[in-house]
Length: 318
Image (tube, rainbow, N blue to C red; front, side, top):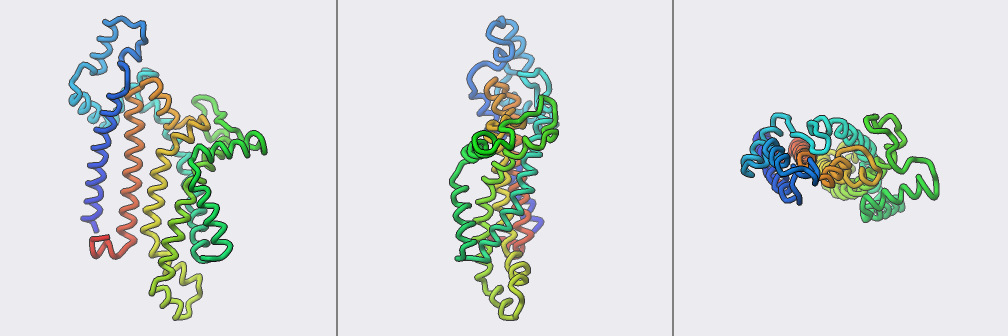
């Protein structure tokens, strides 16, 4: 098992290295000159050339990549062209804001989705199962920005004016200072994540409930609740952990759209602002952070799957 975990870890490091190359190359393709973008169109050629030399833009591309990667590995994300300050300082507060958004979404959506998926699997073919499956199918068909707009119309404007439609906190003020502004972004992300976890939980648990070991437990006269919780649910941990990891990883990317919609001061909004101002160092840092989060969450899911599934631990295949 240790060898399998180390192999997954090595693959994750390789994926991150490939992503770093793609991110660096992609930012090179952005139009315009970074030095001129910082100094403005009225800057003299001498000032542009001096700043280009200071930023290392006159170096070969491979040298710039190695310098950038070396800085990332040592915690130096470079300087922001927009603020003229370290990128790490610019993103510190925004990472906390986005992390809070993702944490609240995960804490709320995971138990709700697992409970509804389990309920739907136990009551297959009944009205409750049909209702849960129907609602989850409708929600799964809607993209996050459509769900967000519908929630704004329902809870902030025309029908009920209960919640703010955009973030109200001032720059530098923590987002949790006004908890009401967190409700709509969290609710939007949760409604996008929950349907997929419900469907996967229902499918996986239904297969487990039809298994021979569950039938044997029933023949022994065990209560249905014991059969489900002690015999069926443990066999679903691995696959469900994979789905949860994929959905949490999706949150890191999907949060960009939701933060833009609600003007939420996180890394998603910072990424959009950085692309608009051609703030290359910020774009590189945020993109790499999102990719690293995605890889780490999937690595954690792989490890959970290995630990939870005896077939993988003993056979080495899946």
